Length: 114
Image (cartoon, rainbow, N blue to C red):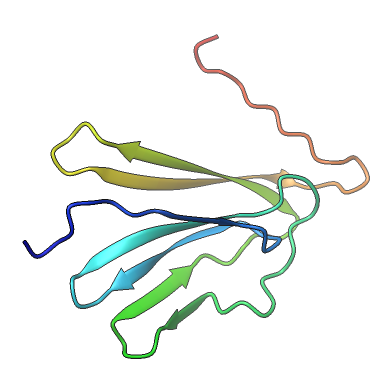
């Protein structure tokens, strides 16, 4: 079997910003989704010092992330579908209105069933 029989999703938090991207395996032609969850409160920070795209030594693996949006909050959704023969993972990132540091950050989620 050429491909692994599992799905991988990497989640990380704490760098001060939110972004999503992927790590690619050029040998197998696979893509691993990556979600970096930024601050739940406060103002997102710049990605200064972080390389948002690149390649690991040897050339097999490369990575690419979206530039984070400053002064906006973002929320990432991870949708894992295990109902089909081949499981899938989808990552969605929603960006909100600008953050007003004086007013604080308020996020209100609405249940679509109500």
